[in-house]
Length: 277
Image 1: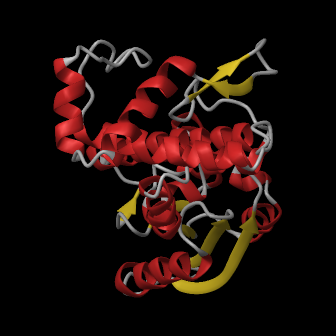
Image 2 (image 1 turned 180 degrees about the vertical axis):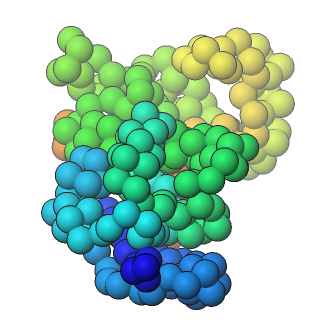
């Protein structure tokens, strides 16, 4: 009887999922702990990069399935390294079963040749969630790079205008008036908490986003509107082009991810307090 072999399969995609070293670490640990004691012998690594098709249609995947024999084991670090959806995962299991191979997912310590249905369903849900998140990130990144809206959202103080597929950022004059008022109150010495209470007392409410519409502004939102107004004033002073993808990325990220912009924010705050912005 031939000794069953172990084939380590890795799939590397830029910026998504585990890197190659982490995948190999999971697979090697799984082999040492579970397969080697069961009489399996290590054979080789098979690594694909970038391809999004089924793993047995990828170059390294084709080589692997050409070398593997019935009873051998294919080991991946996580399910999403071999599959991109629940449907794809089911097809992979069917292909593996028809080939007489074993299929192991190292991180979950799961042999999907068995009947561990509950844990398999957990893996299914993880795959679906990972793929949906990845697709949304990629779609959003393409939209930003092309100067287009992301899921219909727009930066504070701006709005998308124009026909579908050719929308451009323009000032949201109604929101900018509120933002300008916030800057005036802050420069007059009011705290963000006091400004928030003043706006609520005066009946100023959200009017843009369905989940917040007609609700009072929170202190955090007032803080973001203040700093975004200062940024927009600085960009307008420099005649910034709001069709430029770089400008759009800055406008979108400035108050959503505040930490990288701390120094810029502090400088603009000083200029505002000095009446220069």
